[in-house]
Image (cartoon, rainbow, N blue to C red; front, side, top):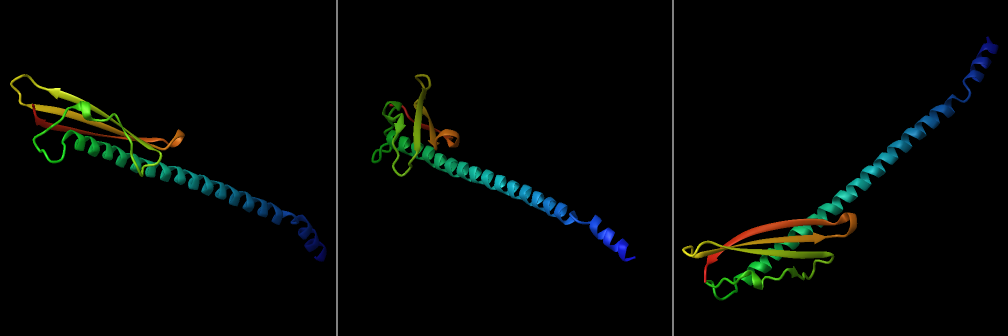
Length: 144
């Protein structure tokens, strides 16, 4: 009987090693998955932040363009697209640029209003992390 116990113990040697290697492999795979998820979340967060900055940059381009079209102090004066800058330099928006496109539409001679479409595109970031957002606004004023 003692001999059978010794034989069965010898046949089980090394099984703990197999279990340990299996556990280490599973833990390594879980760690690799966690690292990949973390890296993906970092890229997503970066793109979200750049997208928000680009949206506000485009909004600033619209606001600056509207302020140029409708000068403060004379509510009845509406200028033309010629005064709207194409590239707007922004302070406090490092790594961002704003491009504004202005299109003017006028009806027939009987129509007394002018319509202007402003499209502002804000771009932030560089390389694979570049994000662009666009805003559009229509304004209407009296023809001069």
